[in-house]
Each structure stands twice: as structure tokens, then as C-alpha cells.
Amino acid sequence: MKITKKLRGVVVGGAMMLAGSVANAGTVTFDLAGHLAATSSGFQLTSNGVTALFQGFRFLTLNALADTIADTSTVTSSQIGRYNAGVGVTSGFKDSPAVDSYDGFDFVSVTLLTGALRIANISFGSVIDGQDSFRWMWDTNGDGAIGGGDTLSQSYDITDNSGSFGAMTGQSSSVFGFLASDASCGVGCTKASYWKLRSISFDVTAVPLPASWFLMLAALGGLVVARRRSA
Image 1 (cartoon, rainbow, N blue to C red):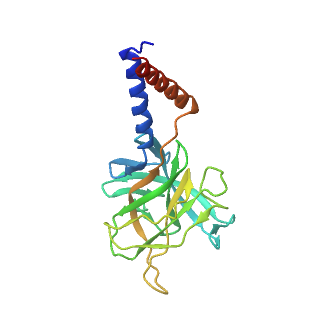
Image 2 (cartoon, rainbow, N blue to C red):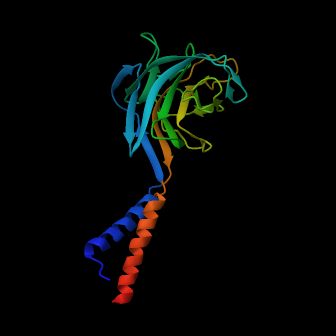
Image 3 (cartoon, one colour):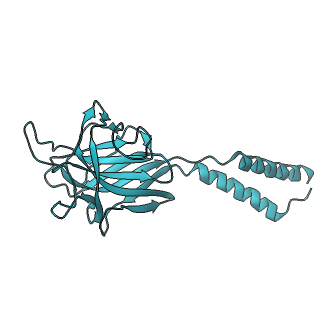
């Protein structure tokens, strides 16, 4: 049985494709620093085949039952822009272009258009006094947006611009939110949190090849074995 060099190349190429798919595990990072005027429609970014939609919103009222956002909470859309320190949210002319908890609670919504993933790490910019905090949320009820019925994490302190957070419990979702929570400056403190979202990384798991690919590679591999035995 004659195996041509071309067919042998297909076998080798297929094996390399299989190895590459298995080795694809890792992280995808979105660097959010840049220059984009605040827009109400949001913006899309693509990194290594993963596409995400970034939008700005604000809770006018935020009520929670344990770790669940109550249906009595009120969400309104805001504008989102990209700046040197990351993305910020603004609701109008007099509102600073940051994610803050002045007169409501700003949050950045991240919708993964290419499917659900797990957060690996996030980092911040424009942190001024080390008394800022954030909460993260995910679309528990599956309606494609952050709001009533979704999960709200505990509050995390942001100490400085170099801080990053990787302990995001491994929750998988296609929609996440990052909320400016009350400032971490003690009982009775009325300071608001103020920051920008600098970057976000997601865990990427290797996608298995379809069964037909494995059958094809096995068949071609069998041909090579038969060729060697008949030689």
C-alpha cells in the first residue's frame, strides 16, 4: 500500500492540530486602557478569538437579599468610555468619568458574545486614596443582563492601582458586572468609591475536536502503520 508524502503530511498536520487544541488552555486578557469618548451604546473588543461587549450602567437603588440582587432594585443605562487608566462610567455632564458610588452605584457590564467563561483576574486604575471598594456580579437568572435575581458578591477593598484580584470563585457566566460599592473607610463614613476598570482576564479551556476529526486521524494513522508493515 502506497502512502504519498502529501497524505503523510495530512496525518502530521492533523496531529499537530490536535496537540494545538489541547495546548490552547490559558487566559485571555482585555486591556481596557485607551481613548474612546463616552458612549451609551458601549463598545466591543476581541482578544484571541474571544469577543466582549462593555457597557455602562447605574443602580439608582440597590437592594439585596443575602447574595442576591432584589427585584426592587432599579437599573438605568449610563455612558462608558476608555481612558488612560481604564474604563469609566458617567451618567451626565456633571458626573465624573469613573466607576463610582456617588448618587447611585455605577457598574461596568461585560457580556461575552462568544460564550461563558470564568474570570481569572481583574485590575484597576485611578484609585486615589486606598479606601475604595468593588463588588462583582454575574447573570444567575440567565436573562442576559445584570439586575434583579442575579448574584452579588461581598465587597472587596481596592488598596492601590497595582492591586489585582484573582480569587473570583471560578464562577462561569457570559455576563458579569463590576460595581462601585461603599467606600471602605469605617463606620459612618460617607466617602464614595472611585475607580476605573483597567483590565480583565478570563480562563480559556481547550475546546475538544469533534469526533469526526478523531476518526479521520485514527484512520490516517492506521494507513501509516499498514504502510510500514508492508515495507
